[in-house]
Structures are given as C-alpha cells and as structure tokens.
Length: 554
Image (tube, rainbow, N blue to C red):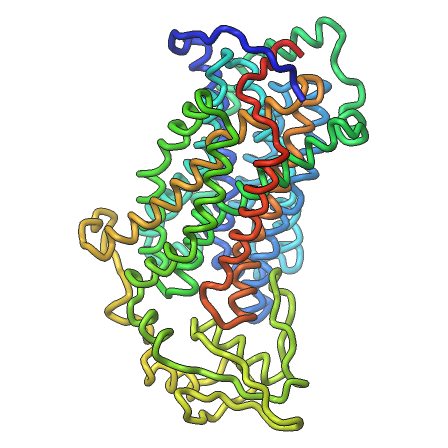
C-alpha cells in the first residue's frame, strides 16, 4: 500500500491548472460513458436492426448479450491499458482509450443493418462493443489516477469525486439525447433510422475531448518517477504476482468495489429495469423518472467525496453498502405502491400456482438469456414471470400434466409461452393490471413532477441515487491511495472493473433471472443485498483506511 504520511492540507481553493485538469479529465470521461450507455438504452431497437433474422425474443437476447460483452471485457481492458499507463504514461493512454471509444460509437451509427449486409452486421457490431468495453476498461483508471496525482494532500477525495460524477452524467446525457431525438422525430422514424443520431453525435463529443486532452501535460507524480528511473518495467508482474500487492487488489475488490458496483447498478440501472419490465411503466416515463433522480442526486458525489477527506473513505463507502442492503426491500416495495398500485394489490390478494410433475420442472435461472425453455412447466412459469405475476410452484403426481390455478380455479394452459390469452385473461380478471392501466404512473412531459404519485417515485429513486453517491463518490481516491505510483494504474483498474463490470454490469440480467426462478418480483434484490453486505463486513475488518496516504512520496 502507498506510504502513510500526513502532510499539511492546503486551505486555498483550486488553482487554474487544477480546474483545467479536472474539467478535461471529467469531460472526456462523461463522453466515454455517454458512448457506452447509448447501446444499453437502445438495446431493443438495435436488436431489431442487427438481429432481424431471429424471432423477437431471440433478438432481444442477442442484443443484451452484445451489451454484456462490453462489460465482460472491461477487466481485460484494465489490464492492457493499465500496463501501458504505468509504462508509457497516464495522459497518452487515456487519450488512446477515448479515441477507440468514440470511433467505435460513431461507426455503430453508420453501420448497415442485417437487412443490408446480412450476418456481417451483428458480427461487426459485437466487435465494436468489445472495443468499447476494452477502451472503457482503460479510461476510468487513467482519468482517476491522473486527477488524483494532480490533487493536493487532504483534498484528493474532493478532486476525484468530479470523475465519479461522469458515469451518471454520461447516462443522463445519453437519456436526454435519446428523449430529445425521439420527441423530435416520433417513434416510427426514430426506430427506423433516428436511433443512429445519438451515435453519430458522439463524433463531435470525441473531437472536443481529444482537443482538450491534447492540451494536458503528463501527471507530475508519474513524470517525476519516470525521470528518476523508478518506473515499473513489468507492472502486471509487480501488481498481481507479488502477494503483498495482490492481496490488496483482492481486498479492494471484495471489501470495496464489489459492493459499490452492485449498489450503483441497483440504484440506476436495475431501478430503470424494474420500472419498465416489472412494473410495466412506459419507457418515456421511466426514463424521465430516472433522469430527474439523477439530476437531483448527482451533486452528492462531490459532497461525499469531500466528506471522505475529513472522516475517511471507509466509513462512507461501507455505510452506503450497509444502509442500501437494509433499505432495498422497503424502497422497491414503496416504488411499486406508487408506480403500479394495481399490481401491488394483486400480488397481495391473487394466488397463482403452477401445478406440475416435478420431473417436468427445470431450473429457470437464465442470467445471460441464452436458454430456451420448452417444458410446459418451465414455459408456464417463464410466461408468468414476464407478466409480473407472483406465482408458486406446486408439485403434482408423477406423470401429471401442467395446469395454472388462479385463486383456486384451473385455467387451460397451452405450452407455447407467447400464446396464453386464457392465463393472461384469468390473472387480469383476478386483479392484475392490464396494459395501459390507469393507475400505472405516466408522465406526459418532463416537468410533470408535482403530482404526488410522480414526486413520491422520484423521491424514492433519489434515495437510491444517494446510496450510489455514498459508495461511488470516495472510491476513486481510495483505490488510488491503496497502490504505489509505479503500478497504480494497473492495480486499481482491475478490481474496479471486475466489481463494476462483472458484479455490477451483470446485475440486471441476473436479478431478473432470480425473479423468474422464484416468482417473486422482489427476489432479485437479494443479489445486491448479499454482495453489498459481504463488502460491508470484509471492508470493515480488512480494508485499510487511506485518506492520510501521501501518494507523492512513493
């Protein structure tokens, strides 16, 4: 770990050069996250454009898998670009990453669809997604390290917290561009060709980012070390083959970024998924609700980053993990109460059972969406889960068929999950909401936020974002301070991107797989609760406090 050395804390504000460093690093990273999140926000449309040879359900699966590929390769990008950053330098490495990211996004906007060039379209799309993931794997570590190494002692949490706002701002910017384009063109034109505009806009963002970053100088801490001939010749070996450093990498993951990642993705991405896919809130309204919560909450990244300079990184990060773990169930239940009260009442009053021979019922756990269910028991349960119907599985006698029982009445069931109008009519007749139910929250414009139903949901989403800012605001400073300068870029990037790219990035799909397997719309929350709790315990007992580390002396 970096050397503990308490030095005098500068009491003056930022210098002009420090403001430029933070602005340049943060602005470029905002654009990079904007590029990355565009695909996730438009996955449904992209599935129809590039996987049109397959049935609709399969298109969505392939589109989500292509999105997940970007998350899965992020740790490899951290290793590749982290090594380059520790050998060549911070400035040029994160300049390269943003060029790769920006060009990959721009090319997606130009890429002919499957109807035009056939199988080549999805192949090229996936290659571009992999390039985006690799670039993002190198971007964050470079930006966080660069800002931290320019920060004065005692203000590192505050300075690096501006980097922490970039993921949320990038998501917010992508949502704004998509909403504006959708509104201007209309849904039909947007789905046909207008979806390309947000991708093409990225070329202008790329140009601004490159111009700004070309004006930056190398990190003074890294440059001093390089001039003295103390830089690492083999950062991967020193970072991961040396147990004294490797164990800090593991602790940073389990006791820090793992819990931070699941809290972050629950508060921003799973919340959006929960609104749309489970509570059946329309996409326009769901995106606006999330956008408002992000707008109100983003400033707290800086609040908690600055607070960590005073009371420490650990107390804030671990408190965020623990409070989130204890609060997720009541908060998501209150979101249901306000967003879809008909569904909430139905879950409490309607009893739905799938009765089948246990030999014909398999495991519905399907986090990456590649499994195809054919057994009638499985297709019945999958259909009910997709319809947000709470169900239980009751095992019948050996050799018996499958039947769905709604409030004690048998309902005829057909094996094709997509064609069960009788089951759907039965659960809706018993009290489950129909499409367009008047009680489901709906916003007619971005400023329709003063209705009690809407305001309550935004308030609850704001609390989730507040948890995100607690765990994420101080994490960059902590990661930078855990490792010595010569292997800092490499060492900090890997646990960050495993915690966020794997544990966090796969959370929405895994949580919904848990929902489908259990028949309980809240069961998916056990995923972030368990991992956030593990981080709170491991971090409390084993992770060192780092706020007084002087990173310029090692």
